[in-house]
Length: 67
Image (cartoon, rainbow, N blue to C red; front, side, top):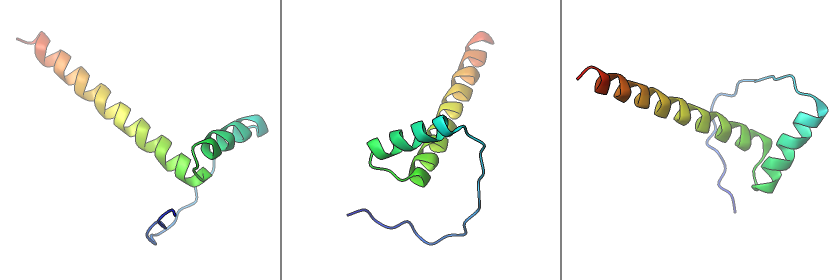
């Protein structure tokens, strides 16, 4: 059974999507056994991790170029 998320302050996020985009996102979420909310949070988390990795790689490349 899934654990319930802790009760926290909730904020509304609105995004304009076509019906097809929304349907595709909902199908991907359902395919992973996630709610639309859970899939949205996971997507933003993955995006943030990717951005951090890119920043770290750029910093390393810059440091290697300065040696």
